[in-house]
Image (cartoon, rainbow over all chains, first blue to last red; front, side, top):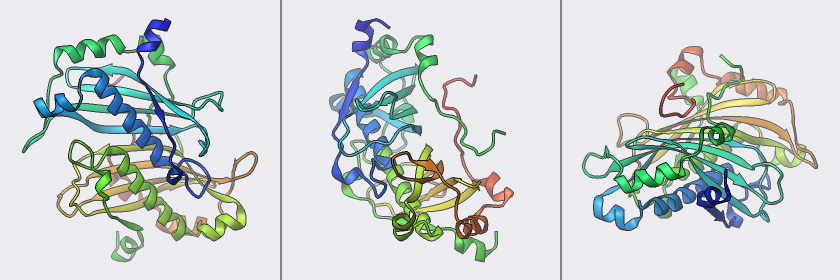
Length: 163
Length: 163
């Protein structure tokens, strides 16, 4: 990936709050997802799905599914940044990935992937097609096949024994 | 499942905090996982993996992987309870499931499954075998094959098109 492309990937920098640390002495599992959720808020702003767009159109993103792999312990003193990737998308949905990076660690702290749907809210919320400008931005951000293969670990069926 | 067995399943009742509601007017995705995380704290107490045990043994549970399906919107005024199930376990790991129930809804609000590992903390945290008393409780709680088949939706690979 070129430097120019890398610069396009949205990066969210989290400030770990003291109350996010659990009795095990590290970031409680759910707060990884809160950080990912804030990273997706930034992605929405970047794509133009921001507060003004939501107010104008009553359209927003809903989370359908999320999967997280916890790969390393994150401590109270750690910095934490989240690199958000577009793994895939169609007319109404985005398959997004988040890689959690700590400067203390040689490998990612966590990996998240999720399915998001563009929804028009109302009495009966329903999937809605992305505006062309959003589709163009998604297309520019979408990972190459090689970068997508390198992303991970991805979601999978959780089980003690493969079936 | 008999009434006696059903009564054994740990149930966690959440109080939805106002700051957990996002700009879409419902429970922000990550807070479903925070509620699941608190439900697992209760399960740990139930299994005897409580604060005293953790202080005595330096053993605790680490989350390895979590997957959530968001099935219904949850609003600020909703009650929310989480039924925790033991889907499977081995000497060191638990495959746990959480079903999110709102009295307003005819079907679950969300379904989570996760892999947890019993770990001895220290300079180099490592997987540790469960004490026999914990294994006995896990065995008593473990879902029957039929109940396990009825649990869900379970984790899976998230993708726009099946590969």
